[in-house]
Image (tube, rainbow, N blue to C red):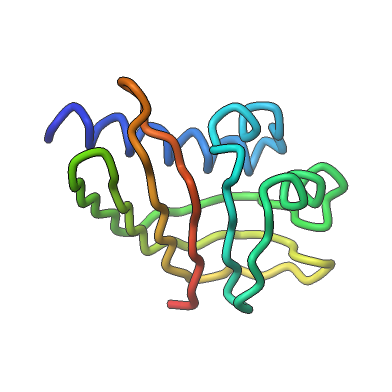
Length: 122
């Protein structure tokens, strides 16, 4: 596995860990300033709003369980696709969500930064 793929996978794991640990400071540092999360509903949520909802537990993540992950790199951009299960309480409704996460990255210097993610049901 290439060094870049290893770095991208490590960043994705850091995002998952920070979500579960309600570590919005780490998410603030990891995610691009203009990061947008597209939810299964189609809602485009800006980074700041998502982090606020993690802080106030409107979105509470308990566990992430990646099932299959692929990474495709094209120059200074990459797409990670992960079939995953997420144990979460979203707006008061707790469920084990099966979803596909498609996270887009840009390389900045030697680091890979998530610029957006698209969640779809699996």
